[in-house]
Figure: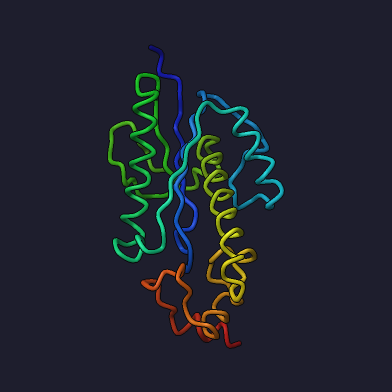
Length: 197
């Protein structure tokens, strides 16, 4: 069988102070390109939603997994991402193993450590399969944070999505941690000073 499929893997929410971390995988044919599918960080929320639909229409396979803030606090963010990426990889091998040519992971570290996997800096901006994975992970995580914000109205989760923005740090300083905050992620003195400025 011809090996002509590319798997891209990326995560969303690694550095957040609250909420889960998501990892997504997308399989495309070699040579696949669509200029609407780019690094999720370079797209507006509306553009990401549109690209999300295109990805489901034009790519071969998409999947995602996530782990909660509780798991992240228990095992650490690096191990959480490692487990999620390996699950995506194993799923893709089970379904398309004979046709997968290469697996690209965004970043400079390869947690999967298999011969057919390559970590690639800025892969989310340069390799369409990884760009697509970054969009899936980001959209799914943002949707979760928007939904959970209803349960925690004191925190503007629908706005900052759990990232360490000035507003979010101010909310933590005022209300403390919510049940979906990562208590293992301690605020630095610099972050606290920034929030007070």
